Length: 405
Ligand SMILES: Nc1ncnc2c1ncn2[C@@H]1O[C@H](COP(=O)(O)OP(=O)(O)OP(=O)(O)O)[C@@H](O)[C@H]1O
Ligand SMILES: [Mg+2]
Image 1: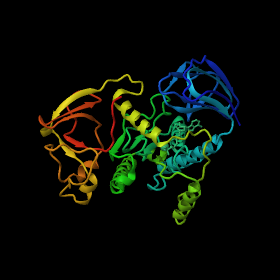
Image 2: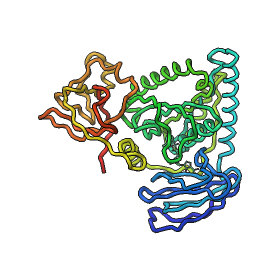
Image 3: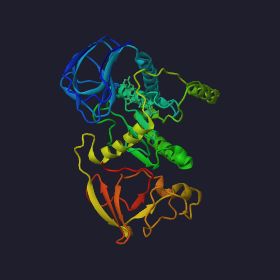
Image 4: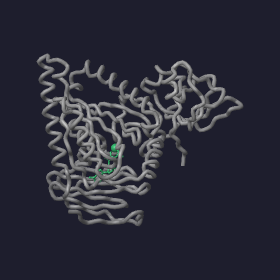
């Protein structure tokens, strides 16, 4: 049952600070406006945002455009300060099912750790590898966050693998990436970025070039496998893998469920578990997704709180190599074909690598945004998150576009 809806779409009128008394196992769902600050404070009890507990004292700023749920297991009073787009409470949540799933994973991690201590083989000492699949806007990324944060709270260091190139919760869209989660995911800063493994695919949709998407996934898998073989703790903690929702529409869940069941029938060590979607998950249309992609890129250069400044720089064409049309490179490794349309054309005069296959399957060093191309003077102007020379001479072009607003 839902109650206490306030404000309204686009309402930006001042709202006084207000308190919500939440019954055990209920949640307050809040949508934050793009440009009106909102903060939350725990007054009594305990509560968490997607698996990360609210601190007992002090205000926590909620990032703009977030759609969050403040959930309590045992009851809590929370206070909101600032204008929101909408806020309401609900006691209908699938959180018990989610936390039970976490408990099963936790037991499997403990079993893997015990097996490793007794010198068991790699298979027995492997912790759970969870892949979260489902239609668009079913709460996949949110469930991943919860499973990771709950595991980290118990001292595990699971690896988060994000295969969703459309949204990208680790870094900018267009990438597949992985990173260890050593503590519950920060409510403000999100996924930690100290040690990410990032492969740049360069497009928001795998169907643009499924071959490259698959090659990058295989490479990520190979690298993670290598890391796990030398690290029993992260091996036991396992992985939580996020995917993108490929299909929308009715009936898809059932079809997917059946497909997965059939696919793993002969594999005794794989379980397919069907979980309910939370009614709180907010639907986002393609325009909203496009905007979110833009904001993710802006955040990379300007910081989540818009408190960073990127550095503008100029580089000569002769100092860098361009790499474009990778799907052609992969099929014809010797001779990249320039006739294939690319939304981001590498300017004439900039050298192209010819045998580039080995390069694009490397972990990327970072991203730059090309703001100007001077064909006459053969120079590129770009912004980068840090000053100084580029860490590598190889630039990979992408079809992602971003206009600084
Ligand atoms: N219980 C909840 N209350 C309020 N908002 C929620 C809740 N659960 C999820 N959301 C929000 O709903 C939105 C969609 O959820 P999420 O990103 O997890 O879906 P998804 O299945 O990963 O979507 P996609 O298919 O785009 O990857 C997110 O902004 C998320 O923060
Ligand atoms: Mg998602």
